[in-house]
Image 1: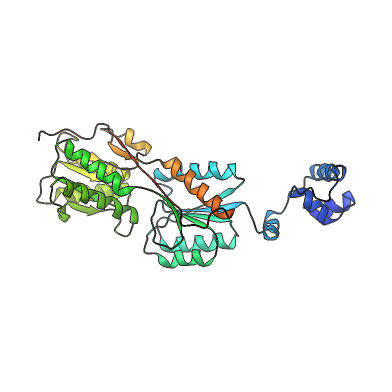
Image 2: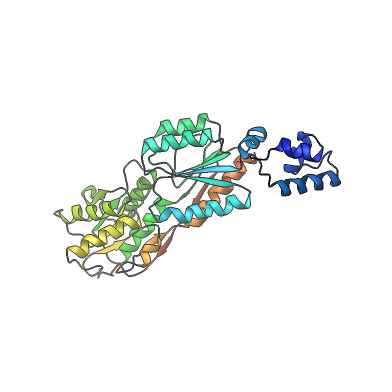
Length: 337
């Protein structure tokens, strides 16, 4: 039978309020001898506080929710580690919610987290267009931080990568290596991340005097299978290209697979680049040139922002944008200009 706070109070000969003060580390009105006696009884009885009830009283559960679109994408676990390590330092636990990039699962998880009285939410949405889910989150009054997605919500805080600058640097690198005909495998049109990186691709071409050809752009969903299919689509086009920039590493790995199947040598015939620098990028053949995101730092910064919001030290509208870093490996060959 579960030991209750009432049992502890009876055994110690004190009120329930006094026991509650000791459990919550409040020393006002509780003598040291009484406090030690209560703690000894708690230890002997193996009493565990009911944190749900305690959370309702204190209006804090010390739990935060983390919503991500795809736990199978190696990009996210390192972010989650950053969130979890930082949460632990501040006394918080996390509930991890994987939506599989599905709007209905996202909606269910938001409702679940609200019902669980979490203190805050870190939210990587499946699509920017899912305004209904965002509005439900805002109506709940639970502090939240957008992660890896830029969503136009007044007063919202977010942490993300500078996708425009990152892809601009990558495509500029390809151009500097002598590539003039560069195709692109983008993420989903609805994703703010995909739109930013596509903008960086276009801008780099135009700034270097290369016309943008929309027919050299195919769209995927950040999964390996869509990179594989996207590369197949590009190879059917009546255009010659010497390089393909991909909006993430998983699609780049899929693109490499298609090229290997077709007997097309990388980078001798076609160069490939990725984005994110997941662990697979250094294990492919050839090893993948990519843009390294500060994944762990993204998680750390998101959790720090959320703690500030939950503690009332921030009113929101904070923006943290991290710059990615070019990692040159073996998948790009220099062309004569």
